[in-house]
Length: 150
Image (tube, rainbow, N blue to C red):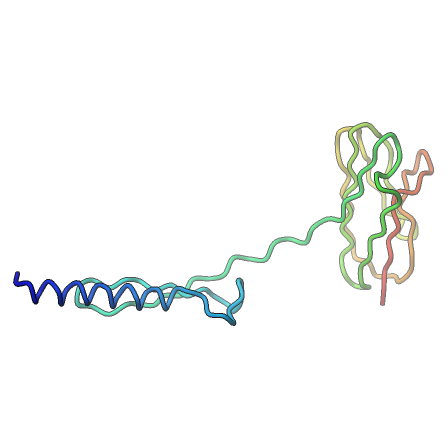
């Protein structure tokens, strides 16, 4: 292979790399997770053209549970306020290293057992506007406040 052919081959390889960089690098206006799918460029075989493929974006993460931590029968950081809009799901997780009691959401009359070292999860449609007490039923201790807005 002559020197001119080698220089031509190196120049073509550099051009392919620059093209790949331009296709793969996000622009200033691009945000992660924008659009339906992500675009990927595939480097071509020598002398070929780059092929573009599309892959599906990952599914959105499940909504988080609002945490309430209890120690010695009391809410850490005081009574927690959890706010949702009417029609949304209220997701509440109560955990405690040392408290066993029943977690109760007044007004919705939903309760779950909390065992020491464990957690109690409540998930329900917040279909009634208002402010509702979340309490440890056995000790009558308020640990949270559910606010359902219009």
